[in-house]
Length: 115
Image 1 (spheres, rainbow, N blue to C red):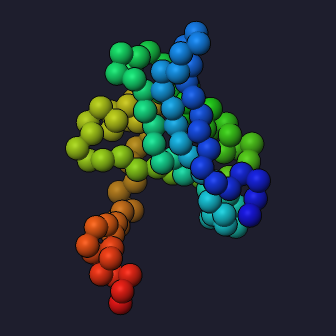
Image 2: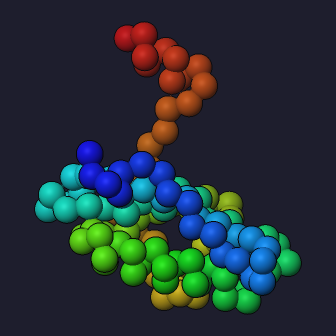
């Protein structure tokens, strides 16, 4: 396990108050046996949205991924989150159409674990 494995928290702070956060991890091995930074959550307090904190966190994460020799930076967003989707598109980041996201949860998770 590398020093960067595990979940990390990055805070967006204004003055002495946290106004947002990102939780992320570097997955090993990623593509080409390098790391893959995976963003689990990005959240900015509603009254601070649209003022640059989300973009600052994304730029921090991108720089962190480069510093840690990651070959890519991935995340997902809910289709029913137009603000989040619009935020990523405004950064110039287009969604991948070739990926399909799968999930097991609840009873289906329990049933599959027993098979």
